[in-house]
Image (cartoon, rainbow, N blue to C red; front, side, top):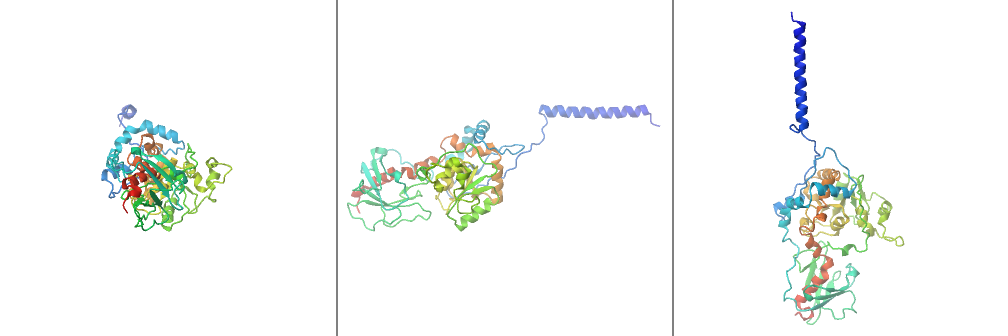
Length: 424
């Protein structure tokens, strides 16, 4: 027969042992010696694919992101606070180090670079260019420019001001087939996707660096006179802005496949889900430029875009170096572009500034990434790091090779040929 006193003593000893073990575990845990696995936000990473103009290192740096480990999503709305968190948790030094492979690979990118200092190739000290016929080139480009190397350049649409031009610029019409000695040089410009020489021009201007003079869409002259109010807050209930009024079947299909997975506003004629084409002004009345003037739909593009975390940008044609205002509008508005277009887009934009939709295996994966990024203020702010850390990558060249600087660069090319004195 078991002694009741001995049984009670055995139970007490067992209880005390368990309590001691539990107290020891708590001490170790709270002192930091023991750590339980943390719960982190699972976000699919972008898988970069190589294209001919990119090194593998550059492609990797271009499309990867550091997403913060957090126990729960943070659906932030204040962009300034997101920037402050990024500054404290990441910062420009770490950002530059992370993307040094991308930066070095584009030190000699595909854009036409500065040829260096002034050379003896210039044959004229002053050049005048007469823009012929109707063209979308903005009137406010007309000016007398003081260019590098002492060259001056008159760019005008007025035959009165340029009564004896050194070059004629044609954009919507074909230049005359013959040029005699003493007549102005013929310049032909085609910035459309299927750029094609006229076959009779002396100089060809296009968006591609392989042609005589390059003109990118990255400058400011594509959107003069617009409302540049930038919202300090971002929508959380509606993530994506999209506006398109040229309803191409392939682009519509691509847009629908993504937008069907994400909350969005579509303001154009294509896949419109807001009603009136000027509905953006109803949502955001601060985007009206002048209350006395009926605004055009493009007047409020940037202001409206700025209220959204993402802007969907799909090119009409996906071809090399054809990177249009659709992408640069989104960048300038303070949103993060979701881009489908040129395979060498990274030759034109800062590192980690866009989401390249072509790098995802499916629309579902892309949508999942966008949703997670929208709830991570630090990771989202990293897409704006290029604004805080200086001009990085080829973006400086893209701006310097834009329509904004075309007059001086074209006048320089005309001067090198000798203008009217060039042999026919």
